[in-house]
Each structure stands twice: as structure tokens, then as C-alpha cells.
Length: 396
Ligand SMILES: *Cc1c(COP(=O)(O)O)cnc(C)c1O
Image (cartoon, rainbow, N blue to C red; front, side, top):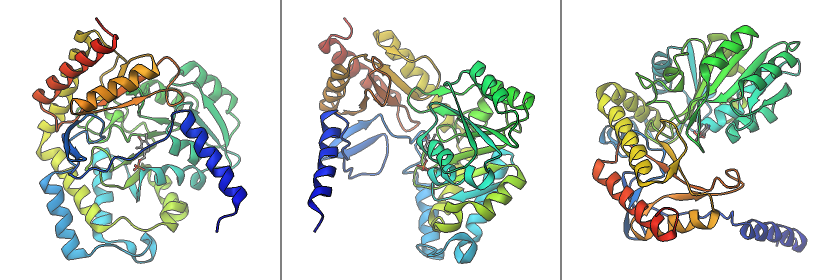
């Protein structure tokens, strides 16, 4: 029986969350993750998955996973360095290094683990981390676990970063940490400027490319490819849980010595189970598909451009940019909520975001485009968005 005081304390906290409208609910889906999903028996157009390349239900990935399941079993029941490494893991690590043109790669169960296991393993109190104010929660947690001095620079503000680099100049190792793409706005970090400053002030650069690996840049190698800074970034972390099939898994890829040290010291790698063989096998199939089906990436970008132009033509405001994350700005929390409710009634699944997840007055619905969508899907979504926005009085 739980102590009554504890129960009351926790209940009060839950009530507080509910009162501020921040309660998160789950939506059980009874279909694969795809352009459309089945929720409570209804078929909905899905505009909020990270399934950028539409690989989450790709037959090649499913087949590769099934084959590995049959041949290699279900799980490893071990961390990597005891008896949890199959050739599939080492092949996937080598494959990622080749893809990103890095020296070496280390797999984790997730990018969250990769980020929380990175800083503490490489840095100590003589060192310094310079972190963008809007970095992903996992980078923030990773920084918290580490004894290095912390310098938080204003979001994408290169003057502020330079000032912090000057302040940090007496620290032994300095590392700049940034998301490659920021998920709320789909903004791309100014990696060229960041690398230039890093070179000038002799700092390392770490980029979390979770919202870019597989589709950004000419070869789909990420924001580092898009910004043309491959080889100048020391560490890239990313996920296999978004564009690359969407199951799970993450990695750190970069300079040999840094990866070697992570392999010796990184706690989520040392103390958490190895990735299941079927996921490593399916991830290898996903990397094959990047080469074999380059049209997927093209379709994603064509879809994104089509939707960005369409939404602007309707008279709705979006955050400018190029990324398939498209924040449709509503500016009022009730209206944003009402928009998503009406769209749901019309068979479209999108989620509203309000303060404190985004700044006050920047209430929005966040659309995420996928290669799985076709033009009919997107034209339908634009039509319904227009109707809903008119009815609510956001546009005329
Ligand atoms: C999604 C995401 C993560 C977490 O990735 P998982 O593999 O799901 O743990 C980390 N960083 C960023 C920037 C992300 O968008």
C-alpha cells in the first residue's frame, strides 16, 4: 500500500499537469506506421510521424528483420562487450561509418542513450561544453551527467557562441553541441559558422542529426551533408528511430579515438542491452534502400515543397525553411487545439503545440511530411486545413 502522503503529493502534481493542459495521452494505433494509420477503427491521414522516408512498413526492412529473427534469434540477453555483439552489429557500425565518412561508429539502443552516454565518458571538470539553448532533452541530460563546465549559448546565436568560446578558452577540451535540425521549428543549425568558430577557437563539434540522417543533403547524409561540413564535425549522433525505419537504435559516429574511448567508458553502452539482431539487420536494409531507392528522398523533398507552397497560398503562416517539419502558426492555444480537433474529424491526424513546449503566441500545429504521402494526400490535407482555418476565423 502506497503511503497516503506520497499518493496525495503525486496526485496534486498530476492535477497540476492536467490544469495547465499538458496531460499527454496515447493513441493506440492498430495498423503499421504509414501514410495512413488506423485509430479506433478510423483510417486517418498521418501528418505527425518521423517516418520521413516512409520506411517504417517497407517490405525489405520487414523481410530483413524476419530473416534475422529466424537465423539469429530474438534478443542478445547481454551487453555488447560480454556476449552481445553479432556480426550484424559490427557490420551496421561499419556501414554507418562509410555512410557518414567517419572513422568509427558505436551503436546504442537509442539516440537518447547515445547523447546521455557521450559527454560524461569523454569530458571531466577541466573541460567545457557549449550547448545551444534549445538542444534536445537528451543532450541536456547528457550535459547534466557530466562534470565539465557548461556554457549555454542563445539559440543559433553565433555572436553569443563566440563570446562563450572566449569565456571557455582556458578549459582543456571544449565541445560545441547542437541539434542539426531543431524539431519544433524544423530549423537547420548554422553548421558552417559553428565549424568555423570551432576551428578558430580549437573546439570540437558534436551534431545530433536525428531529424536529418537519411534524407538531408545531396546524399542524404544529414544536416552535415546539407551544410557541407562533413569531415569538420567531430561527432555525429543520430537515431535509427526516425527516417531509418523508425524501430529503435541510435549511434555516435566520428573520430576514431573518441569512439574508442566511448567503447571503453560510455555507460549506456556498457550497462544496457545490445540492440536486437533483427533491428540491426533491418537498419542495414534501410541503408541499402537509401542507395537503391533514391527517389524516396526526392519524393520527400517534392512533397515538402508542395505542402509549404500550398499552405502559404492558403494564407496560413508557416515558419520559413525547407525541412519536412512544417510548423503552421496559429498564434492562439484554443484555436490551435480547435484546428487539430476539426482536422481529426475530417480524418487528418496532426497535433497542436502550445506554451511551454513552444513560446507564447507561437501556438501551432506541427505537420511532418513523409515520402509515404502522395500528392492526393497532401492536397486533401491542404483543402481541409483551409476549411478549418476559415471556420475558426484564422483566415478569410
Ligand atoms: C528523436 C530525437 C532523439 C531521441 O532519439 P531516440 O533514438 O528515439 O532515443 C535525440 N535527439 C534528437 C534531436 C531527436 O530528435
